[in-house]
Length: 313
Ligand code: C5P
Image 1 (cartoon, rainbow, N blue to C red):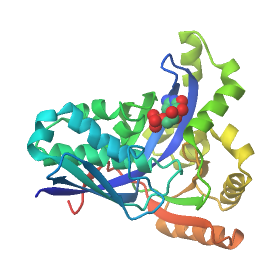
Image 2 (image 1 turned 30 degrees about the vertical axis):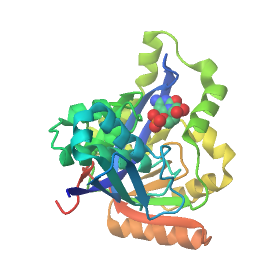
Image 3 (image 1 turned 180 degrees about the horizontal axis):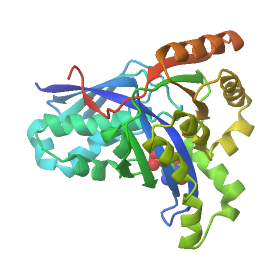
């Protein structure tokens, strides 16, 4: 029986700008997405029956169709029925390290790993582009999770252009354990509050996108000070006023002189960038003493240039 174990890295958003509405009901975005070393381990193996089975070491993770990893296996079995008939169903084992409802794309990364794992297991030989095309049907962040690194993401978030790697920087993540934020809620609330101001004409849309150029320049020049100053997330405008505890983490991080601090995606994780592991560890310790709440989880990890990849490779 063949099985593959894959590392499924989390991401943070260095930049998330909502440019306007899209005809498909989603939002037109300009984002800078960044992989980090914090990762789940996803194992896929062929099983004799035609079923999909998901196991997870975290009891709160659903193991049915609501799990994106399940839906990724289902998509592959529908797209390649002759392979499903030949190799049978798929068993997926998820070892979770990435928190949920965190804005770190944990579920998306797991789904990306299932697609890559099944491609290997069935010897399909799909290109990265083909896998990304397929994955975009399941979720906007999944194409990025496949390729990883530092990337400009536009459209729904699925159109990617690689950027200069920032993988020598470190990051501290802070998240309240039982405080998830729903992504659909965050976008819906943003639309309710700010939808009236969305640009309408292509020139207005382009003008709004211009803001991102400063961040792209800062990244191209590895100018950390400028990267810190141009971190940006429109969803903070709706999430921070609603969740006092997230605002509190955000305010505390800012006091510890990181390169910069920002909420990731729709939250609830807030990150602080650091130039070295020792600076990141110092920020974590200062955060630990200023908010001694045992429900606050803190991680020190590194930015990474890897998307989904085979474990031990
Ligand atoms: O694509 P994904 O399923 O990850 O998106 C989750 C939710 O985030 C969507 O259901 C939608 O409410 C919101 N979203 C959006 N515009 C995007 C991406 C996500 O409104 N470009």
